[in-house]
Image (cartoon, rainbow, N blue to C red; front, side, top):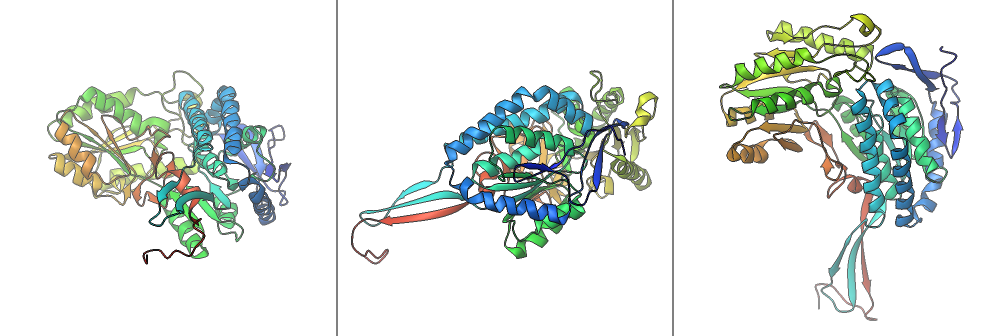
Length: 498
Protein backbone atom coordinates (compact mmCIF):
# COMPACT_ATOMS: atom_id res chain seq x y z
CA UNK A 1 0.00 0.00 0.00
CA UNK A 2 2.89 2.36 -0.88
CA UNK A 3 4.21 2.64 2.71
CA UNK A 4 6.47 5.58 1.85
CA UNK A 5 3.78 7.66 0.15
CA UNK A 6 2.68 10.78 2.01
CA UNK A 7 -0.60 10.43 3.84
CA UNK A 8 -3.19 13.19 3.97
CA UNK A 9 -6.26 13.71 6.13
CA UNK A 10 -9.74 15.20 6.23
CA UNK A 11 -10.22 18.69 7.67
CA UNK A 12 -13.11 18.89 10.12
CA UNK A 13 -13.68 21.83 12.46
CA UNK A 14 -10.10 23.02 11.98
CA UNK A 15 -8.50 19.66 12.76
CA UNK A 16 -6.78 17.29 10.32
CA UNK A 17 -8.22 13.85 11.00
CA UNK A 18 -8.09 10.31 9.68
CA UNK A 19 -11.35 8.68 8.67
CA UNK A 20 -13.15 6.67 11.30
CA UNK A 21 -13.43 3.94 8.63
CA UNK A 22 -9.61 3.55 8.52
CA UNK A 23 -10.02 2.92 4.78
CA UNK A 24 -7.86 4.84 2.33
CA UNK A 25 -7.62 5.88 -1.34
CA UNK A 26 -4.35 5.89 -3.27
CA UNK A 27 -3.74 8.69 -5.78
CA UNK A 28 -1.51 7.79 -8.75
CA UNK A 29 0.27 9.78 -11.45
CA UNK A 30 -1.62 8.90 -14.67
CA UNK A 31 1.55 9.38 -16.71
CA UNK A 32 3.45 6.89 -14.54
CA UNK A 33 1.39 4.70 -12.23
CA UNK A 34 4.47 3.72 -10.21
CA UNK A 35 4.45 7.29 -8.86
CA UNK A 36 2.10 7.42 -5.86
CA UNK A 37 1.12 11.05 -5.22
CA UNK A 38 -0.41 10.37 -1.83
CA UNK A 39 -2.89 8.42 0.27
CA UNK A 40 -6.10 10.01 1.57
CA UNK A 41 -8.97 8.80 3.78
CA UNK A 42 -12.09 7.09 2.47
CA UNK A 43 -14.56 9.02 4.59
CA UNK A 44 -17.33 7.27 6.48
CA UNK A 45 -20.82 8.59 7.14
CA UNK A 46 -19.64 9.54 10.62
CA UNK A 47 -16.94 11.73 9.08
CA UNK A 48 -19.49 13.47 6.86
CA UNK A 49 -21.83 13.94 9.83
CA UNK A 50 -19.02 15.56 11.79
CA UNK A 51 -18.08 17.86 8.92
CA UNK A 52 -21.68 18.97 8.38
CA UNK A 53 -22.14 19.56 12.09
CA UNK A 54 -18.98 21.67 12.10
CA UNK A 55 -20.17 23.74 9.12
CA UNK A 56 -23.56 24.37 10.69
CA UNK A 57 -22.02 25.44 13.98
CA UNK A 58 -19.66 27.86 12.22
CA UNK A 59 -22.35 29.39 10.01
CA UNK A 60 -23.81 31.99 12.37
CA UNK A 61 -20.53 33.64 13.43
CA UNK A 62 -19.24 33.52 9.84
CA UNK A 63 -22.36 35.12 8.32
CA UNK A 64 -22.12 37.88 10.94
CA UNK A 65 -18.48 38.53 10.05
CA UNK A 66 -18.52 41.70 7.94
CA UNK A 67 -18.28 40.84 4.24
CA UNK A 68 -15.21 43.09 3.73
CA UNK A 69 -13.43 41.06 6.41
CA UNK A 70 -14.40 37.84 4.66
CA UNK A 71 -13.04 39.36 1.45
CA UNK A 72 -9.73 40.21 3.14
CA UNK A 73 -9.25 36.56 4.12
CA UNK A 74 -9.92 35.49 0.53
CA UNK A 75 -7.46 38.12 -0.70
CA UNK A 76 -4.79 36.61 1.54
CA UNK A 77 -5.67 33.20 0.07
CA UNK A 78 -5.11 34.63 -3.42
CA UNK A 79 -1.69 35.89 -2.36
CA UNK A 80 -0.76 32.48 -0.93
CA UNK A 81 -1.93 30.71 -4.07
CA UNK A 82 0.17 33.04 -6.20
CA UNK A 83 3.20 32.51 -3.99
CA UNK A 84 2.80 28.72 -4.25
CA UNK A 85 1.74 28.65 -7.91
CA UNK A 86 4.78 26.78 -9.20
CA UNK A 87 4.62 23.93 -6.69
CA UNK A 88 0.85 23.62 -6.92
CA UNK A 89 0.89 23.75 -10.73
CA UNK A 90 3.45 20.94 -10.86
CA UNK A 91 1.30 18.93 -8.48
CA UNK A 92 -1.72 19.40 -10.79
CA UNK A 93 0.32 17.99 -13.66
CA UNK A 94 1.59 15.04 -11.63
CA UNK A 95 -1.78 14.09 -10.18
CA UNK A 96 -4.15 14.90 -13.06
CA UNK A 97 -1.83 14.56 -16.06
CA UNK A 98 -2.34 17.83 -17.99
CA UNK A 99 0.78 19.48 -19.39
CA UNK A 100 2.65 21.88 -17.12
CA UNK A 101 1.47 25.09 -18.82
CA UNK A 102 -2.10 23.90 -18.25
CA UNK A 103 -1.29 22.94 -14.67
CA UNK A 104 -0.02 26.45 -14.05
CA UNK A 105 -3.10 27.84 -15.79
CA UNK A 106 -5.32 25.74 -13.51
CA UNK A 107 -3.77 27.44 -10.48
CA UNK A 108 -3.84 30.88 -12.09
CA UNK A 109 -7.57 30.52 -12.61
CA UNK A 110 -7.94 29.88 -8.88
CA UNK A 111 -5.82 32.97 -8.17
CA UNK A 112 -7.99 35.06 -10.48
CA UNK A 113 -11.18 33.81 -8.86
CA UNK A 114 -9.83 34.53 -5.37
CA UNK A 115 -8.91 38.10 -6.23
CA UNK A 116 -12.27 38.65 -7.96
CA UNK A 117 -14.33 37.28 -5.09
CA UNK A 118 -12.21 39.11 -2.52
CA UNK A 119 -13.41 42.30 -4.19
CA UNK A 120 -17.02 41.14 -3.84
CA UNK A 121 -16.54 41.44 -0.09
CA UNK A 122 -16.87 45.20 -0.62
CA UNK A 123 -19.72 44.91 -3.12
CA UNK A 124 -22.26 42.08 -2.74
CA UNK A 125 -24.56 44.70 -4.15
CA UNK A 126 -28.32 44.84 -4.01
CA UNK A 127 -30.69 47.62 -5.05
CA UNK A 128 -32.17 50.70 -3.42
CA UNK A 129 -35.48 51.62 -5.07
CA UNK A 130 -37.76 54.64 -4.50
CA UNK A 131 -40.96 53.91 -2.62
CA UNK A 132 -44.35 55.03 -3.86
CA UNK A 133 -45.09 56.24 -0.32
CA UNK A 134 -43.54 59.16 1.59
CA UNK A 135 -41.08 58.55 4.43
CA UNK A 136 -40.49 54.97 3.34
CA UNK A 137 -37.49 53.29 1.71
CA UNK A 138 -37.12 50.00 -0.16
CA UNK A 139 -34.04 47.92 -0.79
CA UNK A 140 -32.87 44.42 -1.58
CA UNK A 141 -29.86 42.76 0.00
CA UNK A 142 -28.02 39.48 -0.51
CA UNK A 143 -27.95 37.09 2.45
CA UNK A 144 -26.08 33.78 2.81
CA UNK A 145 -27.96 30.51 2.64
CA UNK A 146 -26.17 28.18 5.05
CA UNK A 147 -23.96 25.10 4.80
CA UNK A 148 -23.04 24.04 1.28
CA UNK A 149 -21.77 20.76 -0.14
CA UNK A 150 -19.27 21.43 -2.93
CA UNK A 151 -18.55 18.40 -5.12
CA UNK A 152 -15.86 18.80 -7.77
CA UNK A 153 -14.29 16.77 -10.62
CA UNK A 154 -10.71 15.77 -11.37
CA UNK A 155 -10.02 17.63 -14.62
CA UNK A 156 -9.51 21.05 -12.99
CA UNK A 157 -8.49 19.98 -9.48
CA UNK A 158 -7.65 23.50 -8.23
CA UNK A 159 -9.61 25.87 -10.48
CA UNK A 160 -13.08 24.35 -10.16
CA UNK A 161 -12.93 24.03 -6.35
CA UNK A 162 -11.84 27.68 -6.26
CA UNK A 163 -14.81 28.62 -8.50
CA UNK A 164 -17.07 27.26 -5.77
CA UNK A 165 -15.25 27.80 -2.48
CA UNK A 166 -14.45 31.52 -2.83
CA UNK A 167 -17.93 32.78 -3.80
CA UNK A 168 -19.49 30.52 -1.17
CA UNK A 169 -17.23 31.91 1.55
CA UNK A 170 -17.37 35.59 0.62
CA UNK A 171 -21.17 35.33 0.60
CA UNK A 172 -21.12 34.18 4.22
CA UNK A 173 -21.80 30.45 3.76
CA UNK A 174 -19.88 27.57 5.26
CA UNK A 175 -18.60 24.64 3.22
CA UNK A 176 -18.11 20.88 3.21
CA UNK A 177 -15.88 20.22 0.22
CA UNK A 178 -15.74 16.75 -1.38
CA UNK A 179 -13.16 16.66 -4.20
CA UNK A 180 -12.68 13.94 -6.77
CA UNK A 181 -11.03 10.80 -5.43
CA UNK A 182 -8.72 10.91 -8.47
CA UNK A 183 -7.12 14.26 -7.52
CA UNK A 184 -7.42 14.48 -3.72
CA UNK A 185 -3.91 15.75 -3.00
CA UNK A 186 -4.39 18.90 -5.13
CA UNK A 187 -7.60 19.57 -3.20
CA UNK A 188 -5.85 19.10 0.12
CA UNK A 189 -3.07 21.52 -0.78
CA UNK A 190 -5.66 24.10 -1.88
CA UNK A 191 -7.54 23.79 1.41
CA UNK A 192 -4.30 24.05 3.38
CA UNK A 193 -3.54 27.40 1.74
CA UNK A 194 -7.06 28.75 2.24
CA UNK A 195 -7.08 27.84 5.93
CA UNK A 196 -3.60 29.37 6.31
CA UNK A 197 -5.13 32.63 5.08
CA UNK A 198 -7.22 32.78 8.24
CA UNK A 199 -10.53 31.04 7.56
CA UNK A 200 -12.01 30.23 11.01
CA UNK A 201 -12.39 26.64 12.18
CA UNK A 202 -15.44 24.91 10.76
CA UNK A 203 -16.05 27.38 7.95
CA UNK A 204 -14.24 25.21 5.38
CA UNK A 205 -14.28 21.44 5.87
CA UNK A 206 -12.75 18.77 3.61
CA UNK A 207 -13.88 15.15 3.33
CA UNK A 208 -12.33 12.72 0.88
CA UNK A 209 -14.09 9.74 -0.62
CA UNK A 210 -15.89 8.31 -3.63
CA UNK A 211 -18.79 10.02 -5.35
CA UNK A 212 -21.05 7.00 -4.94
CA UNK A 213 -20.61 6.82 -1.18
CA UNK A 214 -19.27 10.06 0.30
CA UNK A 215 -20.68 12.39 -2.38
CA UNK A 216 -24.18 10.96 -2.41
CA UNK A 217 -24.45 10.90 1.37
CA UNK A 218 -23.14 14.45 1.69
CA UNK A 219 -25.38 15.96 -0.99
CA UNK A 220 -28.58 14.56 0.53
CA UNK A 221 -27.55 15.19 4.14
CA UNK A 222 -30.32 16.96 6.09
CA UNK A 223 -27.79 19.45 7.47
CA UNK A 224 -26.79 20.67 4.01
CA UNK A 225 -28.70 23.66 2.64
CA UNK A 226 -27.30 23.71 -0.90
CA UNK A 227 -25.23 21.65 -3.32
CA UNK A 228 -22.92 22.87 -6.07
CA UNK A 229 -21.77 20.04 -8.33
CA UNK A 230 -19.55 19.77 -11.40
CA UNK A 231 -19.36 16.47 -13.26
CA UNK A 232 -21.14 14.27 -15.75
CA UNK A 233 -24.72 14.91 -16.87
CA UNK A 234 -26.13 11.56 -15.63
CA UNK A 235 -24.70 12.10 -12.13
CA UNK A 236 -25.80 15.74 -12.03
CA UNK A 237 -29.34 14.91 -13.09
CA UNK A 238 -29.56 12.15 -10.49
CA UNK A 239 -28.21 14.47 -7.80
CA UNK A 240 -30.69 17.21 -8.71
CA UNK A 241 -33.61 14.76 -8.57
CA UNK A 242 -32.48 13.65 -5.11
CA UNK A 243 -31.92 17.15 -3.69
CA UNK A 244 -34.78 19.23 -5.07
CA UNK A 245 -37.57 17.44 -3.13
CA UNK A 246 -35.50 18.11 0.01
CA UNK A 247 -35.68 21.86 -0.61
CA UNK A 248 -31.95 22.32 -1.23
CA UNK A 249 -30.42 24.90 -3.53
CA UNK A 250 -28.84 22.92 -6.38
CA UNK A 251 -26.51 23.93 -9.17
CA UNK A 252 -25.02 21.38 -11.58
CA UNK A 253 -22.42 22.21 -14.22
CA UNK A 254 -22.28 19.15 -16.45
CA UNK A 255 -21.21 17.80 -19.81
CA UNK A 256 -20.86 19.08 -23.34
CA UNK A 257 -20.61 18.02 -26.96
CA UNK A 258 -19.15 21.27 -28.15
CA UNK A 259 -18.98 22.24 -31.84
CA UNK A 260 -16.53 24.41 -33.75
CA UNK A 261 -17.98 25.68 -37.04
CA UNK A 262 -15.43 26.42 -39.76
CA UNK A 263 -16.87 28.51 -42.59
CA UNK A 264 -15.51 28.71 -46.13
CA UNK A 265 -14.26 32.28 -45.53
CA UNK A 266 -12.37 31.35 -42.33
CA UNK A 267 -8.62 31.65 -41.94
CA UNK A 268 -7.96 27.91 -42.06
CA UNK A 269 -4.58 28.07 -40.34
CA UNK A 270 -6.20 29.84 -37.38
CA UNK A 271 -9.14 27.42 -37.39
CA UNK A 272 -6.80 24.41 -37.38
CA UNK A 273 -4.82 25.85 -34.50
CA UNK A 274 -8.01 26.49 -32.54
CA UNK A 275 -9.43 23.05 -33.32
CA UNK A 276 -6.21 21.38 -32.12
CA UNK A 277 -6.30 23.24 -28.82
CA UNK A 278 -10.04 22.79 -28.39
CA UNK A 279 -9.97 19.07 -29.22
CA UNK A 280 -6.75 17.90 -27.58
CA UNK A 281 -6.00 20.38 -24.79
CA UNK A 282 -6.17 18.51 -21.45
CA UNK A 283 -6.28 15.37 -23.66
CA UNK A 284 -9.88 16.30 -24.45
CA UNK A 285 -10.85 15.98 -20.79
CA UNK A 286 -12.81 19.23 -20.53
CA UNK A 287 -16.55 19.75 -20.46
CA UNK A 288 -15.89 22.48 -23.05
CA UNK A 289 -13.66 20.36 -25.30
CA UNK A 290 -14.30 20.66 -29.04
CA UNK A 291 -15.48 17.17 -29.95
CA UNK A 292 -17.31 18.16 -33.15
CA UNK A 293 -15.72 20.17 -35.97
CA UNK A 294 -18.43 21.23 -38.45
CA UNK A 295 -16.78 22.34 -41.69
CA UNK A 296 -18.25 24.05 -44.76
CA UNK A 297 -18.19 21.70 -47.74
CA UNK A 298 -16.10 24.08 -49.86
CA UNK A 299 -13.13 23.84 -47.45
CA UNK A 300 -13.86 20.43 -45.92
CA UNK A 301 -11.09 18.44 -47.62
CA UNK A 302 -8.46 21.16 -47.23
CA UNK A 303 -9.27 21.72 -43.55
CA UNK A 304 -9.31 17.99 -42.81
CA UNK A 305 -5.91 17.48 -44.44
CA UNK A 306 -4.36 20.39 -42.51
CA UNK A 307 -5.99 19.35 -39.25
CA UNK A 308 -4.98 15.67 -39.47
CA UNK A 309 -1.38 16.52 -40.36
CA UNK A 310 -1.16 18.86 -37.37
CA UNK A 311 -2.76 16.31 -35.01
CA UNK A 312 -0.22 13.66 -36.03
CA UNK A 313 2.62 15.97 -34.97
CA UNK A 314 1.37 16.38 -31.38
CA UNK A 315 3.72 14.72 -28.92
CA UNK A 316 2.36 12.52 -26.15
CA UNK A 317 4.18 12.32 -22.85
CA UNK A 318 4.54 13.25 -19.20
CA UNK A 319 3.14 16.73 -18.75
CA UNK A 320 6.19 17.79 -16.76
CA UNK A 321 8.35 17.45 -19.88
CA UNK A 322 8.58 20.72 -21.82
CA UNK A 323 8.21 19.02 -25.22
CA UNK A 324 4.91 17.32 -24.35
CA UNK A 325 1.80 18.54 -26.17
CA UNK A 326 -0.78 16.03 -24.87
CA UNK A 327 -0.75 14.23 -21.53
CA UNK A 328 -2.47 11.03 -20.38
CA UNK A 329 -6.06 10.16 -19.58
CA UNK A 330 -6.72 10.39 -15.87
CA UNK A 331 -7.02 6.65 -15.17
CA UNK A 332 -7.44 3.20 -16.69
CA UNK A 333 -11.24 3.31 -16.66
CA UNK A 334 -11.32 6.59 -18.57
CA UNK A 335 -8.82 5.25 -21.10
CA UNK A 336 -10.90 2.11 -21.67
CA UNK A 337 -14.04 4.20 -22.13
CA UNK A 338 -12.38 6.34 -24.79
CA UNK A 339 -10.97 3.31 -26.62
CA UNK A 340 -14.46 1.79 -26.65
CA UNK A 341 -15.83 4.95 -28.30
CA UNK A 342 -13.09 4.77 -30.95
CA UNK A 343 -14.18 1.23 -31.80
CA UNK A 344 -17.79 2.42 -31.91
CA UNK A 345 -16.85 5.12 -34.40
CA UNK A 346 -15.23 2.57 -36.69
CA UNK A 347 -18.24 0.26 -36.45
CA UNK A 348 -20.63 3.11 -37.28
CA UNK A 349 -18.76 3.81 -40.51
CA UNK A 350 -16.80 6.93 -39.64
CA UNK A 351 -13.39 7.16 -41.31
CA UNK A 352 -10.45 7.05 -38.88
CA UNK A 353 -7.97 9.61 -40.21
CA UNK A 354 -5.34 9.46 -37.49
CA UNK A 355 -4.78 8.14 -33.97
CA UNK A 356 -7.20 5.65 -32.54
CA UNK A 357 -4.80 3.62 -30.42
CA UNK A 358 -3.33 3.44 -26.96
CA UNK A 359 0.26 4.73 -27.05
CA UNK A 360 2.72 2.40 -25.32
CA UNK A 361 6.13 3.22 -26.76
CA UNK A 362 8.93 3.84 -24.28
CA UNK A 363 7.82 5.40 -21.03
CA UNK A 364 4.25 5.81 -22.30
CA UNK A 365 3.46 2.21 -21.35
CA UNK A 366 3.49 3.25 -17.68
CA UNK A 367 0.57 5.62 -18.22
CA UNK A 368 -2.85 6.00 -19.83
CA UNK A 369 -2.07 7.57 -23.19
CA UNK A 370 -4.25 7.64 -26.32
CA UNK A 371 -3.11 9.11 -29.62
CA UNK A 372 -4.94 12.28 -30.73
CA UNK A 373 -7.76 10.83 -32.80
CA UNK A 374 -9.61 12.38 -35.74
CA UNK A 375 -12.66 10.85 -37.41
CA UNK A 376 -13.87 12.15 -40.77
CA UNK A 377 -17.10 11.72 -42.75
CA UNK A 378 -18.97 11.60 -39.45
CA UNK A 379 -22.77 11.77 -39.61
CA UNK A 380 -24.65 13.75 -36.95
CA UNK A 381 -26.59 10.63 -35.85
CA UNK A 382 -23.46 8.65 -34.92
CA UNK A 383 -22.77 8.06 -31.23
CA UNK A 384 -19.30 9.61 -31.52
CA UNK A 385 -21.03 12.79 -32.71
CA UNK A 386 -23.69 12.78 -29.99
CA UNK A 387 -22.22 11.39 -26.75
CA UNK A 388 -19.59 13.00 -24.55
CA UNK A 389 -16.37 11.00 -24.94
CA UNK A 390 -14.11 13.08 -22.67
CA UNK A 391 -10.89 12.16 -24.39
CA UNK A 392 -8.63 13.13 -27.32
CA UNK A 393 -11.20 12.23 -29.98
CA UNK A 394 -12.97 14.61 -32.34
CA UNK A 395 -15.42 14.18 -35.22
CA UNK A 396 -15.26 16.21 -38.45
CA UNK A 397 -18.70 16.77 -40.03
CA UNK A 398 -19.54 18.42 -43.38
CA UNK A 399 -22.07 21.28 -43.62
CA UNK A 400 -23.66 22.90 -46.68
CA UNK A 401 -23.89 26.48 -45.39
CA UNK A 402 -24.17 28.56 -42.21
CA UNK A 403 -27.77 27.52 -41.54
CA UNK A 404 -26.94 23.84 -41.96
CA UNK A 405 -23.85 24.17 -39.73
CA UNK A 406 -25.86 25.80 -36.94
CA UNK A 407 -28.62 23.18 -37.25
CA UNK A 408 -26.02 20.40 -36.88
CA UNK A 409 -24.41 22.20 -33.92
CA UNK A 410 -27.77 22.62 -32.16
CA UNK A 411 -28.85 19.03 -32.81
CA UNK A 412 -27.52 17.88 -29.45
CA UNK A 413 -28.81 17.23 -25.97
CA UNK A 414 -25.94 19.40 -24.72
CA UNK A 415 -25.48 23.15 -24.94
CA UNK A 416 -22.40 24.31 -23.08
CA UNK A 417 -19.95 25.95 -25.48
CA UNK A 418 -19.77 26.57 -29.22
CA UNK A 419 -17.52 28.36 -31.66
CA UNK A 420 -17.38 29.71 -35.20
CA UNK A 421 -14.43 30.63 -37.39
CA UNK A 422 -15.41 33.19 -40.03
CA UNK A 423 -14.40 36.59 -41.40
CA UNK A 424 -17.96 37.40 -42.47
CA UNK A 425 -19.77 39.67 -40.01
CA UNK A 426 -23.14 38.23 -40.99
CA UNK A 427 -21.99 34.67 -40.26
CA UNK A 428 -20.68 35.67 -36.85
CA UNK A 429 -23.83 37.64 -36.00
CA UNK A 430 -26.12 34.77 -37.01
CA UNK A 431 -24.02 32.29 -35.01
CA UNK A 432 -24.03 34.51 -31.93
CA UNK A 433 -27.81 34.77 -32.19
CA UNK A 434 -28.74 31.19 -33.10
CA UNK A 435 -26.21 28.83 -31.50
CA UNK A 436 -28.03 27.16 -28.61
CA UNK A 437 -25.31 27.18 -25.98
CA UNK A 438 -24.40 29.05 -22.83
CA UNK A 439 -21.09 30.25 -24.31
CA UNK A 440 -20.27 31.30 -27.89
CA UNK A 441 -16.78 32.05 -29.22
CA UNK A 442 -15.98 33.83 -32.48
CA UNK A 443 -12.60 33.00 -34.07
CA UNK A 444 -11.51 31.14 -30.96
CA UNK A 445 -12.00 27.53 -29.82
CA UNK A 446 -14.64 26.32 -27.36
CA UNK A 447 -12.30 26.56 -24.37
CA UNK A 448 -10.95 29.67 -22.67
CA UNK A 449 -13.70 31.10 -20.44
CA UNK A 450 -12.74 34.00 -18.19
CA UNK A 451 -13.75 34.17 -14.54
CA UNK A 452 -15.42 37.61 -14.63
CA UNK A 453 -18.39 36.31 -16.63
CA UNK A 454 -20.93 33.58 -15.82
CA UNK A 455 -20.01 30.06 -16.90
CA UNK A 456 -22.53 27.34 -17.72
CA UNK A 457 -24.76 25.80 -20.33
CA UNK A 458 -28.28 24.87 -21.34
CA UNK A 459 -30.10 21.59 -21.91
CA UNK A 460 -28.14 18.69 -20.33
CA UNK A 461 -25.08 20.88 -19.83
CA UNK A 462 -26.40 22.76 -16.83
CA UNK A 463 -29.03 22.89 -14.11
CA UNK A 464 -29.57 25.81 -11.79
CA UNK A 465 -27.37 28.87 -11.42
CA UNK A 466 -24.21 29.56 -13.43
CA UNK A 467 -20.72 29.59 -11.97
CA UNK A 468 -17.93 32.22 -11.85
CA UNK A 469 -18.44 35.98 -11.80
CA UNK A 470 -20.58 38.71 -13.27
CA UNK A 471 -24.35 39.13 -13.22
CA UNK A 472 -26.05 35.78 -13.04
CA UNK A 473 -22.89 34.07 -11.82
CA UNK A 474 -21.98 32.19 -8.67
CA UNK A 475 -23.18 34.83 -6.21
CA UNK A 476 -26.73 34.06 -7.31
CA UNK A 477 -26.14 30.46 -6.27
CA UNK A 478 -24.67 31.26 -2.89
CA UNK A 479 -27.02 34.06 -1.77
CA UNK A 480 -30.73 34.68 -1.37
CA UNK A 481 -32.41 37.97 -2.02
CA UNK A 482 -34.08 39.64 0.96
CA UNK A 483 -36.28 42.69 0.34
CA UNK A 484 -36.57 45.24 3.15
CA UNK A 485 -39.26 47.95 3.42
CA UNK A 486 -38.70 50.55 6.18
CA UNK A 487 -41.50 52.98 7.01
CA UNK A 488 -40.43 55.94 9.17
CA UNK A 489 -43.59 58.04 8.69
CA UNK A 490 -44.96 57.25 12.17
CA UNK A 491 -48.35 56.36 10.67
CA UNK A 492 -49.95 53.40 8.91
CA UNK A 493 -49.53 53.68 5.17
CA UNK A 494 -51.27 51.26 2.83
CA UNK A 495 -49.47 50.63 -0.43
CA UNK A 496 -51.58 50.98 -3.58
CA UNK A 497 -54.44 52.35 -1.44
CA UNK A 498 -53.52 56.01 -0.86
